[in-house]
Length: 260
Image (cartoon, rainbow, N blue to C red; front, side, top):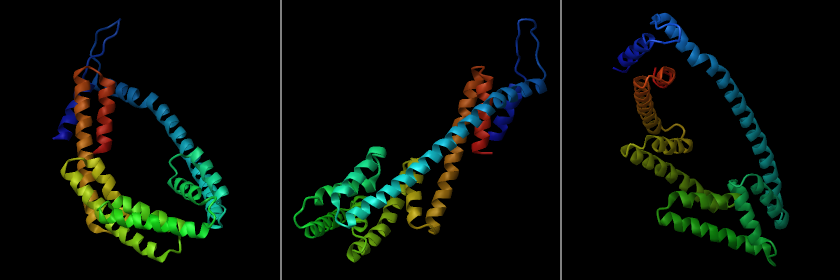
């Protein structure tokens, strides 16, 4: 059905009249279609190339920044591990000044602030970790799986040799997969397809070979592409009805790219 509509639109666009001051003449199908191709592809090609170039430059900058911040964080954590909480705090703060969303740096800053100046730093560190561990278990008991996982992950990161925390971290990770999967299924039923995919991909990151998750993702991606193509086709039909041939042509091309 969609292909039939697309064929009719292309034919209609190709037969549309074009007026000039000197003549009032209907162009041939071939010449108008070529004109539409030039309008759709000529100037757009240069714009797309520039857009891709700037996106590539931006991506490379992000990679360089991430590498630099990772290096600074390693130094900050080494200070923390050795009990130099003042320098650990300063480096963590420097990371956050560049990237306020750096969660590990935020965690290290909070821990260093809590421990620096302590008269018994070893005991203070042990109490801090136990407090975070109990908080994680409390969140888990309340059914707040994602929050519990993140809090237990902090304990593991701040104390990599903590066997008890590592055990619970693995258990919570398994439960987190079920949490993401169920959210994805619920959002699919509510027709929130993009959000559903986000959660299912999160579940797949935890269990990469889970055939059930892969099946759900494939199914929803097919439905999402179909929905996007239909929406784009509808917009193209509206543009064509308004006489906006260039925009209609570009919209049709986008629809075909989404769902050939």
